[in-house]
Length: 72
Image (cartoon, rainbow, N blue to C red; front, side, top):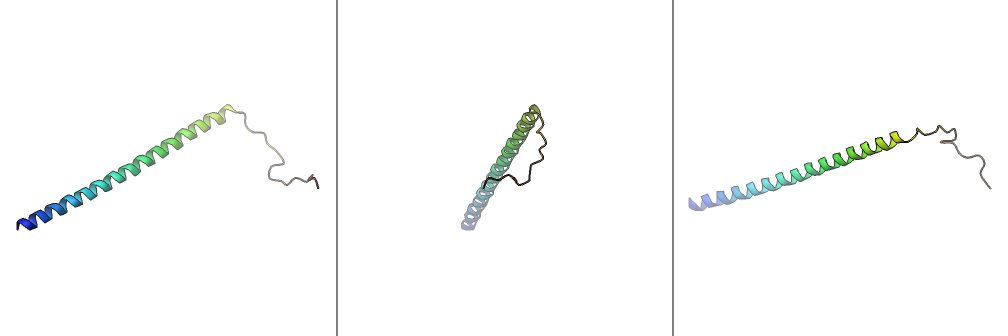
């Protein structure tokens, strides 16, 4: 009976340790995702401020067309 008690105790501690490790790993993943979202938000905020400082780009007619005056 005592042997079974200690076996259950060891098993419980092992499962508890495994679940704690999984929780820590999940917490790290969530923290990394939050940091990534914050970086993207900061980049977009920076990009928007830089974009608003500049003049709008000029409309060009030759965008997407092949040049016809190629040098042979």
